[in-house]
Image 1 (cartoon, one colour):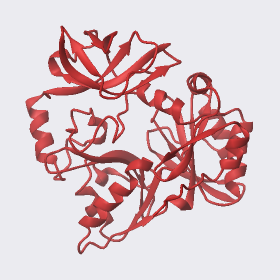
Image 2 (image 1 turned 60 degrees about the vertical axis):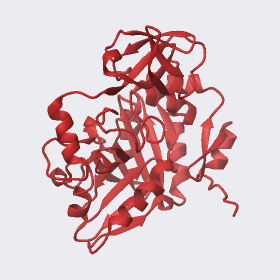
Image 3 (image 1 turned 30 degrees about the vertical axis):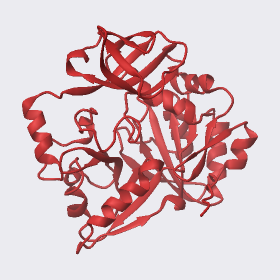
Image 4 (image 1 turned 90 degrees about the horizontal axis):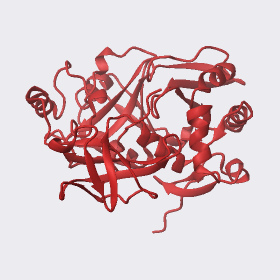
Length: 356
C-alpha cells in the first residue's frame, strides 16, 4: 500500500515563500525557507512563526479522564485547573521513556499535544490501556491548524492579534476571538524564552491568521531552524535523544515529573533513582570545534576511551558553533570536561545552552 503525505493547510503560502519540504508523521512539513541561519536569528533576535499543524492533538473526554491519565502520566494532573497545562511523559514499568506530551486542561476535557512522529505511538498506548474506564480518546489532529510564535517579539505580536495579554506561565492557555473564530493561545517554553502556540480550527480563518502573523513581523521558519533552536534549549526529542531504552532521569525529564504525586507507571523506579541521587549516564550538551554537525551515534571520547555518543547536533547561528546533545557516563558529565567527537575537540556544556 502506498501512503500519501498530507499537505499542511498553508502549503501554497509556504511554497510561495520558497519553502522546501520533508515528511514528518505523515505530513509534508516546511524544512526551510531558503536560509535556516537567518530563520534561527529571527527567532532569537525578533520573532518567528512555524507551522506546527502536523503536531498530534488528542481530545480526552469522559468521567474517568482525570483518574485514567493521572495513573499513566508522570506529572500531577490533579493540580491542574481550567486554563492551565503541564509537560508530562509516559513510562514503562522500568521507568524507561515511552513518549512525552503537553497536557492542557480545557474545562470538560483535556487536550494532549505530541510530536508528529510519536502521535500514533502514544494514542495506541493509551487506547490499549482503556478497559472499563469512562474515557474517550478522539484524534483531533486534522481539526486544528497550529502555529508556533517564538522570540522576544512574540508577546507584543500575539497581544495585538489576540486583543488581550497572552498567558505568562508555561502551558497556561486561553481562548480568544480572531475574526469570529475561536483561537486557543498557549504559552510555550519549547525553544526557551518567549513563545506561544496558536490553535485555530481548520477552515478559512487559518490563512488569515498566518498572514496576520507574517504581516505583523514574524519570519516563517522551518524544521531545520527548529532543530537547532531545540538543541539550544536542551530539549530532548523522543525517537532522537530518548527512546524506550532511556531512563526518564537520564534524559533530564525532571520538568515532566512530579516528585510528590501518587502512583503512576514507573513511579517506584523513578523514586528509587531520586533517592539514590545519581544516574550511570546523563544527557549532556556539547560544544564542538567543528565545521559540520556530527551524525547521531558518533562516539564521544575522553582520554582515549569512548564515554558516550551523540544523539543530535546542529549548527547554531546564535552561538556561532556546532552544538550537540548526547549521553556520557556520569564521570564525564561535568560541564567543562574536554572530550573529542570524531576528529573534533569538544567540551561538555551545561544545559540549556540558551537562557533568555
